[in-house]
Image (cartoon, rainbow, N blue to C red):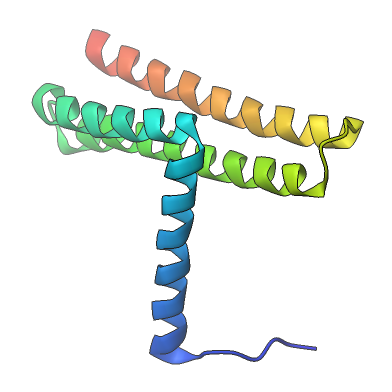
Length: 120
């Protein structure tokens, strides 16, 4: 059975409100999100000064924000797993580890992008 709820502009407004609640909760409860937010801001500002083209700027600026996005998803996974219970379960640990690995991959790709563009 389909969910009934707000439609049109009201649905879009509600989605924006829920997104802001997610940002607020994530930044309040997750140190990694706060750190990656600061990193995103700092690297975007640096990218303005070091990029030689629009493409370089987009790559340098977008990579830390994609990392931030993956961290948001990882934090959501961790919150759901933690809600289920405190006891150890192999699948819970695996879910958290895989989410963490996704963030690690993004951090490596961000670093690689910056190194290639700055050295090339």
